[in-house]
Amino acid sequence: MTQDELKALVARAALEHVVPGQLVGVGTGSTVNHFIAALAEIRDRIAGAVSSSVASTARLQALGIRVFDAAEVQRLPVYVDGADEIDGQGCMIKGGGAALTREKIVADLAERFVCIADESKRVAQLGRFPLPVEVIAMAAPQVARRFAALGAQATLRPGVLTDNGHPLLDVRGLAISDPLALETEINQWPGVVTVGIFARHRASVCLLGTAQGVQTLVF
Ligand code: 5RP
Image (cartoon, rainbow, N blue to C red; front, top):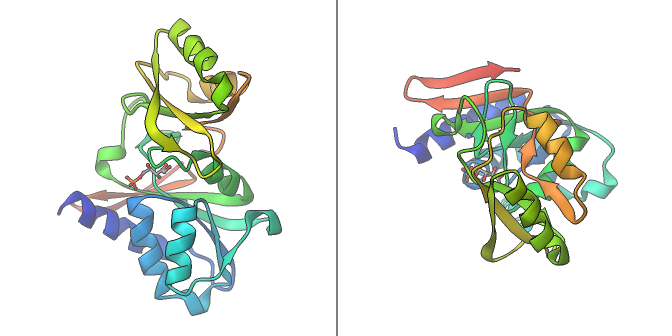
């Protein structure tokens, strides 16, 4: 199976985690795009969706799925999203698609985070994928210097502003041996909007697409 076929496989498997009659939180990215397409087949059986990006909102609405503003919602039973990397504890790097801030906001509303990913995303330790960090523009050089002090290299993602109008740093060369501690530390730095480590909001379950089919990892 191709990587895209694996993404489609796990996206469809995620339908089993959608709670009938309820809202579902929807992430962003190519794997989630397959999930949105599958979700459209059961749109009459859900109350609607809370979206994590302008792009996902447009796709959901184009397929006739009602989208609710996160600010109107107190709780979601489930949030479905992809990842750039996921480790053995369900901690993730996210933000390859620049949607990390809204993804974390919607994930925070959810009781369960269902990660959908092809097996290339499964890692023993986070950090090979460059860590996305959304920052307030005036803080970008200082935040980059803080990463340099940790032995890492932060570069602005060229030509990209997030849906919130902020630039993104991509950070290479970080050793992420303790994802929760590093997420907590980076969150303290002035000007950091969101760091793409999802340890506090780690996956409850990962549906991993493999050549043998969907593997379910419970954390
Ligand atoms: C977007 C994300 C995505 O979930 C992540 O980049 C994975 O994307 P894809 O499903 O296209 O591989 O965090 O900000």
